[in-house]
Image (tube, rainbow, N blue to C red):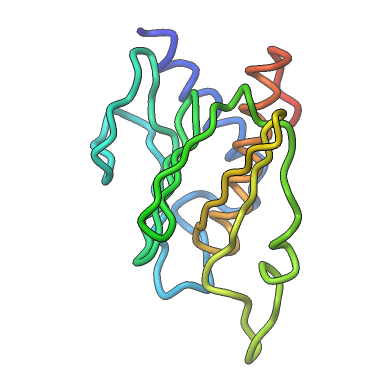
Length: 157
């Protein structure tokens, strides 16, 4: 179990090194940052049972959605529907929401970003997260997790 804690620390540290601001200074266009990173054993907002050897890395609880990224999977609740995808099953990011993720309205970007993940079998998982820094970090984190799980190496950092 100690190795999974070291893995969590390393993946978060390496991924954070790729963001130009420390976690404490992240910005969003949302009213407040609702995204939390897990550096230690802290309670998650959702009532999910994590698998043995699975630890939370990031969660974002918004008014209308919830996402939890763990060392093994991503769990999303949108429109009261829960869905999940294993990190090892993710094939690529979908780009269906990228235009709206960067749309400027009244001089500001959107409060949240929608991220789409596509599994190798074609299944899709969609989740929402705070815009700007949290969304950027989540994408890099997922990318790193995919590479570690599938290739055994970090691609960035």
